[in-house]
Image 1 (cartoon, rainbow, N blue to C red):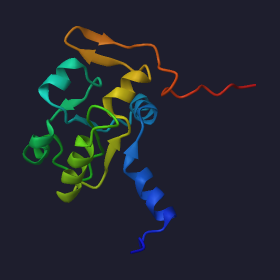
Image 2: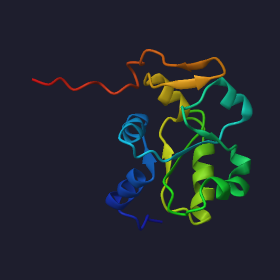
Image 3: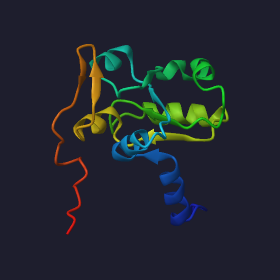
Image 4: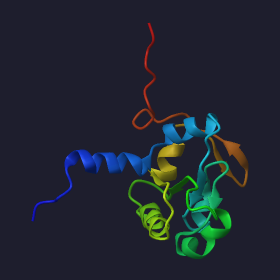
Length: 143
């Protein structure tokens, strides 16, 4: 059965509903900070998180989001552990089914955020690691 969605429509939808760590960091630096939800377990949260993120485990999203984002047009970025985890996609689906209109999933989750050398917070404080050359954006040389 052929898919009625064109490739153009598919990729446009994908871009509208995903963001990557560099773009999220740039939006936050520019003052356009969305609500960032960490939907991992308490153990995952304890291992490290994106600064300013709010912990709302996946199973609690439906019952806990209204207090954090009463406006259905609130920009929200959801993340879980990494690219092999679909917890963020499940949470984003829940939010969208509840009527939230500006939900995005963070590509690569917390793993790619940390591997790109962006700041993380743990119980020991704030830190960052050297960027991993396999996932960090390559700086463009300017003439």
